[in-house]
Structures are given as C-alpha cells and as structure tokens.
Amino acid sequence: MDAIELGVFSSRLEAVCDEMGAVLKRAAFSPNIKDRLDYSCAVFDQFGELCAQAAHIPVHLGSMAFAMADIVDRLEWSPGDMVVLNDPYLGGTHLPDVTAIAPFYVEGQLRGFVANRAHHANIGADAPGSMPLSTHIEQEGVLLPPMHLIRGYEYQAEAVERLAAVEPGGQSGLGGDFQAQLSANRVGVRRLQKLIGTMGEGCFLDGLTALNDYAERLAREEFEAIPDGVWRFCDVMDDDGAGGVDIPIAVAVTI
Image 1: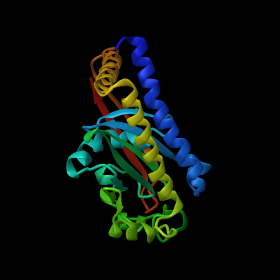
Image 2: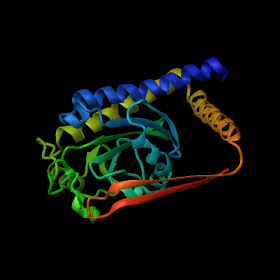
Image 3: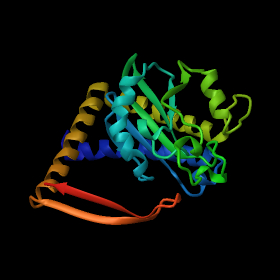
Image 4: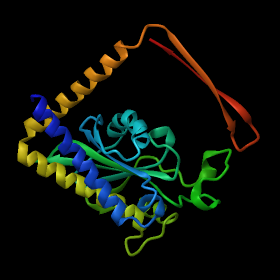
C-alpha cells in the first residue's frame, strides 16, 4: 500500500471501532456507558495484535494490547463465539470493566477479533457502584476469567447464570448492558467481513501488516529522539483507603 491507501485503510478500520462504540452507547442502559462514555472498542488481528481502536478510553485497551495474544492462545475459537472477562490478572482492569471478545471468520478461516470493554454499574460488590474500599479482589465483585458466554451461536448456561447474578435480564437472562456489548461486537464482525469482501482477503491482511509496520517505524523514531541515559521520577499516592498514606510510586526508564 502507498501512503494514501494506508491512510484510507486505517480510517476504515477506525470507522468500524467508531460504529461499534455508537451501537454500545445507544443500546446500553447504564449511565456509565450512555452518559459517561466509559467504554472502548478495538480490532485485533488473528494473533491478538491490536490493529485499530476508537478514541474512546484507550487506557481500557492498553492492557488488552498485551493480553490478547495469551487469550487467543488460551481458548478454542469458532464462528459465533463470544468470550467475556474482567480478571485484571488476565487482561482486565478493575472488575466493573467487562470485556467482550468475538472472532471473525472469512470462508471458515479465522482472520481476527473485535473487542469492547464497558464499565458496568454493578458487578456484584457489597457497595453501590461496585467500587468499594476493599483489601481483597473478591470484595470488589464477581471475578470473570476468560470464558465463553456464547459458543457457536449458543448461549452457555453457566456463564449466563454468573452474569445474570450481577445484572438480571429478560428471557435470555442477560441484562441490557451485556446485550449491548454483544450487539456492538456483532456489528463489528459484520463490518469487517464486508470490508474484506470489498477489498479482498489478501489486501486486507497486507494492510494489517503495513499498518503495524508503520506504527513501529513511528515509535522507533520517537525512541531514537530520546537521549541515552536513565530517567527517574517519583511521586506519592495520597491514600489507599486501607490506612496507608503517601505511598511512593517510582519509575526508572533506561534508554
């Protein structure tokens, strides 16, 4: 791809993420999602490498960019799947942020994933808002390891039961915010399949490679502009809510 073609391709991928976010916002019930816009959407390649994300709340997907490869390898995938998780040790952030991941296939071949992460008003904690002052992670609510909510277009009863316990829903057992996340991913899958059908599978995959190569060149140029040395900074966190005050946070970056 030349520079213009790559720019158009990048914008088309970002447009998929933008549309996923629009669906999520309009379909959700929680003010955390509809009003505070506390959600993010992204596209990953078949290996779990981040390819595009909308300008929502990138911190959500910063951790996902490093965790997706492990999640992709950890699970078996098939068309119609939907995986959910919130475990911060396996690619999540804090427990109210639930991630939904869906693979997309072209002619039976896995070609990538779409994902969105949204902040739920209730994830099962004792305190309203599911952001209590806690000393152990289980006190923050229901911990969800990466698990299939839908497998081959079929809802998985155990996963539905776990989610319905924190956000009761209608006949499906799932609440509106979970349904909104699933809908956003379904739209993302359809748009990407249509995009590949328009430009061709080979061109699409070449575009993903070119886009990530371009991002790497930009990053390397920025790193090369930083003088060699060790750069240090220290600050303090005022309070941890459990009696600790002025907790030091220090970093040393070596170039």
